[in-house]
Amino acid sequence: MQAKSYTPSVNIIRDEERELNYYVTPNANDVVARMVNHYKLGLRSFNIIGTYGTGKSSLLWALEQDLKKKQTFFNASFVENPTLKIVKIVGDFNSII
View 1: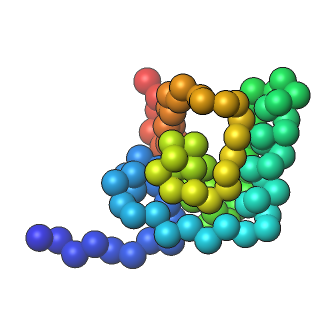
View 2: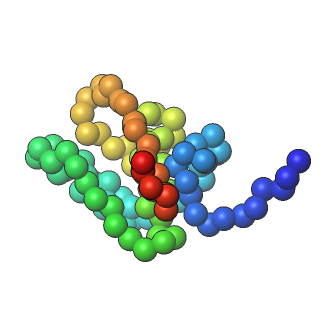
View 3: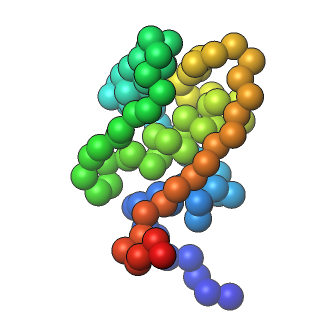
């Protein structure tokens, strides 16, 4: 059995079965609150931009757990009694073809 190597990076597909230990920061709370508020105003697309290692994937993973009611991080409420379908896309350096 190969030992797991440490990586500070989160991959939302590779790591989906791992336990999430996420520490909510004021910035993360602000990002999710903005997403919820803008969603309620009719915006349905959001860009989360930041340099490597700033927590973008971790935030999305925590938000997913929150929306699915698996763990509570933000109490995000986009709509009452949502029906969710989460599509995970992870970039790659190879051609999409």
